[in-house]
Length: 296
Ligand SMILES: [Mn+2]
Image (cartoon, rainbow, N blue to C red):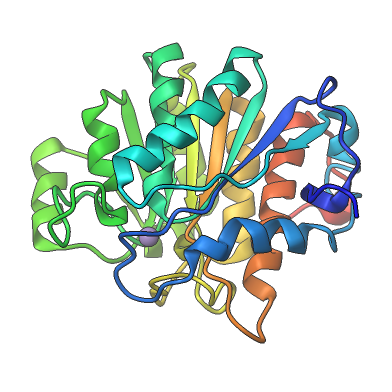
């Protein structure tokens, strides 16, 4: 048996440009549990993907070879778990490699965001999510998945672009108003994904960008396997359109895909998650001319 790698490829660490960091963390999940299995099942599903991407007409792993790190044992205490993950992230960033964090619950975003912010003080964040995740505290835990964007803002993030939001608390609504945050709610995004992407690019300017993709930002009909499925989400092509436009112009320094909760007898969620990761990497690393046949 070979190593457990993304796409099932044989990897050469010396040549790697993209590094997958599994973050099987689950401690503060509020509704349905199972996100701990997320990274493993995503990587497993990736082994059934086509290597060829029909839009970019490339096999991105040839241009940007992959390295899949082994799953760490993560302590339950959030701050300790984040420290463990940061220790995995640091050498990746030191070598100038492109990090892709695979969750696990949304809390893990901070493990990549914090070291990236040290290197890019003017870092901005694009958040694909059904939830604002701006609570100060949730179920007596300040590192809950429901608080992750609040913590991210406190780190000194330059700007945040929440996209696909359709569920938030009164406290969060007031916080958004107070801070004057621009939230791209799901109905607006579904109506005009392209306009939303353009608006974000204008606001971003030439600052570096980190992207966190909570899979519940998508519609539960596309991804039923998430902790908290909210109706009325983005469709597959809405999300691709946004990521494609952003990838063409922004300088992206890393991304994560989180909150995958694999279901028994239904594999579409992990397969979509794997496809999304591969697709997004194709957009980022292939400055391409799209085939007219495949143009979305
Ligand atoms: Mn969410």
